[in-house]
Image 1 (cartoon, rainbow, N blue to C red):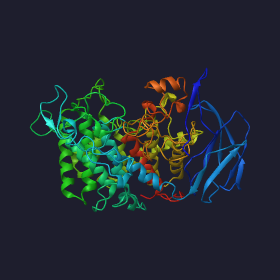
Image 2 (image 1 turned 180 degrees about the horizontal axis):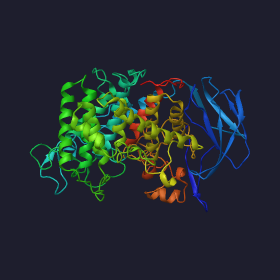
Image 3 (image 1 turned 90 degrees about the vertical axis):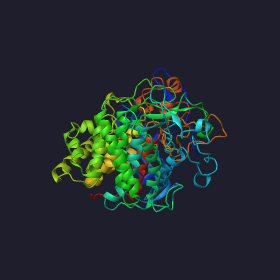
Image 4 (image 1 turned 120 degrees about the horizontal axis):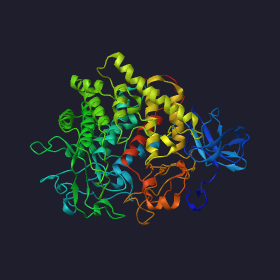
Length: 599
């Protein structure tokens, strides 16, 4: 059963959420040899007794809780409990405290196998320009191709620029729809495709990681059976689109990338992509988009080299051209005001994109020019710039992507230089691990001023990627523990007792903001597909539903599972990408007791 997540009228201080049992656990479950912790919301200040029971009701373990005081993220008085010593695999376990029983959960080695493939299937579901096949996704999710040449105005195959931007038309078909809307943004595509390629690349660079689950014939992609790992087939669908967004030679700003393409006005709600009747438009090129193209195409050149050398060469040429164009036009910024029909994605600091692009080009070519750009960057020795303390990596903060790859992908840095980059990664991971250890809910996320930001769940997951990489590099268990505790938070061990991934856990998000997966608005349409990550708590409350329902909310409580609460409940490619990376990482751990450095 999917728990209904309702909220009631506002109390004097804050809204009263229906959060079910006060006993909070990871509703999917815990790895056999991993940490097993939970939290109970209680007014009691003295330790309480807890009991772990198997599905048949037999008592398997017991102990007492540890008072943790007021959790600042939720303003709840909480206590924590730890049953890590239990290593018997099974389903339907529950923890009871003071007569209140948690949601059921499992203990086992391979609890994340389906999450890995579901989180990756999200990308196929949201492909543009190709029919979504019932044989791969089931009849309710199948649909005709969106924005292909049969669409009104020839969809994305023949797109004019916005007025005053250019005087020609481009075929920018393919790629992934970004989020709840049907826009395609180069700066969101860049980080998303990079993280899919990095999930694949980790199977090549880290000892003991099984590449098979991401391999050919293993995922729901129409290209399965073509001799290329399925995760790379998915990445290529986006990469081909990103290449099409490059301004052609002979035109003004040649080599740069258009910032985005979307409907002239906001697409109506709900609208299946193939039923969209609006004209699409290209928006002016930006330095940030151009560097996203340079970075992702350079990485693509590296990972496709052994599968399709011709495509790899095309990517590398595009990456070098984009780098040169960005160097020639380093300050063309997307306008913060350009938000009719799609998000603005304005970003006035591109030092991080320059660093990321230089790193990827250096890794793929070994060229001195790019090495110099990396080593001379003021970000290179600045852990706060690479991995911001509050938020971490995001579409607007991409330097960390470059640093993680420099730390893990074989390259021409000296041993000393390489050690310095690895130190940056472990320093950042130390802080995220400390944040997790300090939090009653184990969350490796401590935003500055305590306010949760838009897409906070993706920030949690991106911090977990840094922690997971640090664990790959060092084998230190505290990094692994913080990754697994982060997963506990995402899957229900949080102040709302809410699993933020559709189809995972009893009380899971299933009304995310999306123009086709809009069941709440129209019962003929489906709920989001399993494995879709909700953005999560957002102190900003930038939509009417959230403003009304959540006024006065504590940071980690600023969430409602409602279709039109887009500021807390949207889904996007750049949130599902770190979920897929992490699900892949955790599934690869087996039982979870790995203490050895594997790189």
